[in-house]
Length: 454
Image (cartoon, rainbow, N blue to C red; front, side, top):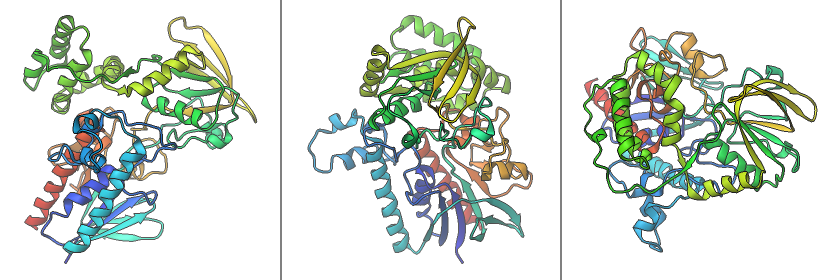
């Protein structure tokens, strides 16, 4: 009798979990759900234009933690460049997507040879209902009885800003999906507005320009523009941050970090990298009050130091700013009025508190993936939350989960597990490939061990 597993999400996490589950000696029947036919790639690696680059060098992008050169070797199949050259190279997102697609095709072949069955399902999982000791997963076409289910949903679309009325959500003047901008609705010479000044904003500008947009880009975010270019790591710093013991209080970390900043004022990114190596364990041991303080006062500063873009992308942005074709405003939007051909925007400047106004033809939401599963949006996470099958973490960053075995907290101890950005409330840093690949490997082993006990 085969053990039936449902994986909701066919991006990197879902596809790589399926790959590692094939190590099981038990016969498995795996149903993996994805919104489109591009299994393995996820939203991030099927970009609208081919010129968009990864924000991390190729040497850090292997899909396997025990084969750190796997992606570099894949890139360098014809040995045209040295490994070191590829190691620090920023390659195209779509090229990385091809790499993941190839791994997915290999996964299906391995399953066929090993006696396991993988069912790729194109479509949405709508609901999970505990029933007779199993989990009934419902879609528009199917009702499946499963033994285990894994939530590997990846990035959600951004939350609709409160200043945008629901009636305007599907307007041709508004793109709520920053990974698939409505470029066909944008005229080449009238101004546009981007909400948010993070990594997605950088990609959005390049998509606009590649599609013939020549007008001015306005950008509004609470803090303004602070993205920095990636710098090749220097020699390892003899910093005390390498030797911190966990648990450690947030106040102690801040004190130590400021001491190290005075010693290495130009190496802030390196100092953050030292902390990031232990960030999951540090965050897990913080109190709720410490996590809340971090989110309110330190989140932005961490993001500036942590999130970098390729030098090529940084140069593009600097040219945009220099040519005044990009203007970044630090402030808060207070009102938006959508009309047939224009959108009128009112915002309050951060430093002066003065009210300013813009008139644009299109608004693009680059505020980041939604994380609060309690907000009704028609998705399965909200449905599970409303039915008290899963819970939001206290800061509404994801799903409350036991990070020792990835099982979600539920009243009846249901065999439901979570991966990736759904663990943000428990681990904080949980979206980069080097973190996701380890989670996939660990959860696969947890599940295999559980199979063996049955």
